[in-house]
Amino acid sequence: MAVARKSKTARGRKQDRARVAGGQDYEVQYEAKKTGKSARAVKKAVKKVGSSRKRVEKRLGR
Image (cartoon, rainbow, N blue to C red; front, side):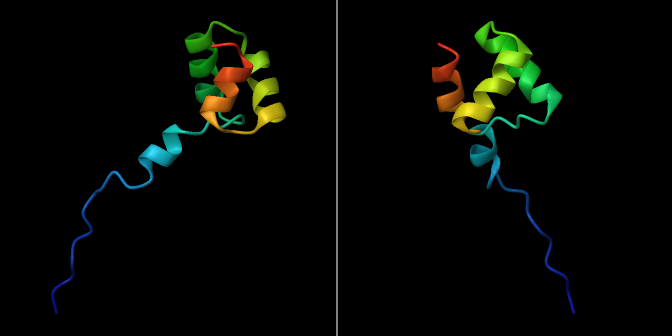
């Protein structure tokens, strides 16, 4: 019996990019550099408005 190979898709990537993982230092640093704010400010924004990238950037004034 042949085993079907799983093809790689972009499924889930778009959803992942729409979120900021406040516990992941590399994501916090990326967002901090992108918005010109401190990592602490990014973490605070994630805690206040949730992990939605749009809401975090709006909160940070970008």
